[in-house]
Image (cartoon, rainbow, N blue to C red):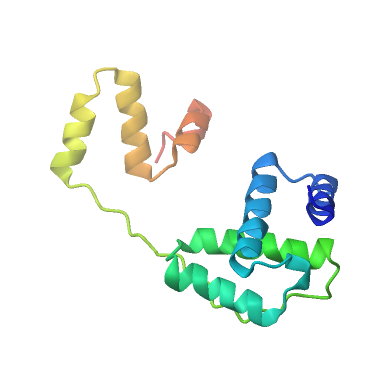
Length: 149
């Protein structure tokens, strides 16, 4: 294990990062080193710019993957190498917005009709009718219902 890798692991442990974050950030720095064939502490702005262009254009990575790599490399540069700031002019791809499909009345009726348990059918009806999340439906109490309205 290289001294730079040890320093990065120690910095992440000191900040309480999860094991999954450790693995992701280390993989981002490792991939950068493989791409440039140089140690990450010797790279300049142009090298980093080229690497991110490679991720977006050639590897066609998802926006979340590019952001993860960016954050891992930024952590190395700012926290481990103590560089003042990483001012990369990286145009991170935008997250695609997905509009959820709406159910037809027949589809909603079929879902509610397929539910044999009256308790679950009531929960589904409240969830759909009020636009609640599952956790919100599960947290509902009788006192939350305004019977007058």
